[in-house]
Image (tube, rainbow, N blue to C red; front, side, top):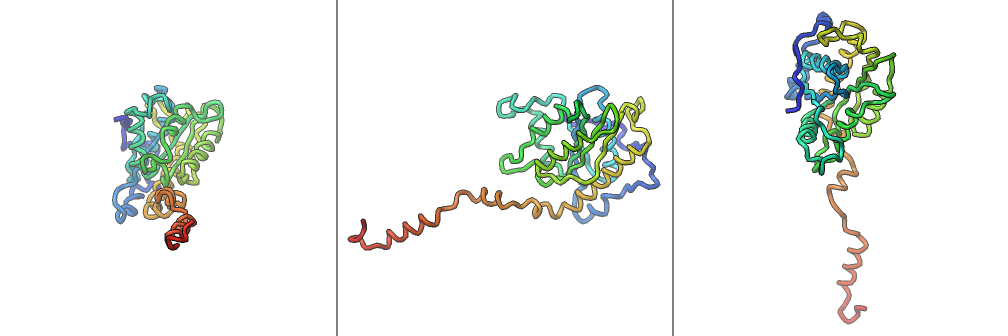
Length: 255
């Protein structure tokens, strides 16, 4: 499977446990079944990818809060339309994970003022509709970015636009990590800072909103246009009335 193995999944050296809620999801899942299922995507294939390191910190926090995170590894994902019919194991797995998820986390580096190609490639492989199933509609979404320079919000703004286009519910909070190379130690762990605290805030909000929305997703995503499309073509009422009128005429009076 193309899932990243999370190093030290239960070690949170930058988290102040006095103020962290390890039971955040427990009370809400007690009456609603399974823990919140969260898919995390990152946007760089470098050995020391800061978007991946941020996603890994987010995944550890999600585990701590009682959610079930899975990180997709896009290293062998083809370009859209590169493989006929998108018939590639990585594409199938990404779509299956999207269908599995109730919420998602997207984190991209900012490159030339925008999200990266590998980030967009992953999202382009997630169609709005797929065999009657919708891999993104109704999911909650948290957006984050990393930058090599000063603070910026270009990437998260683009991710918000994409989330809206893909019919997802993007949470209000977000994270942008400037000069990301300064925020991690040699082991790839994020140092304590207000930037780390913002990521904690974002994950808390994502878990809460995902669970609060769970019973209502069906109502919130019920669409007139989709109900009409599923019903198929509706007979033209005028043609039906004309046919009935012709059949009701005496044989000798038919034109």
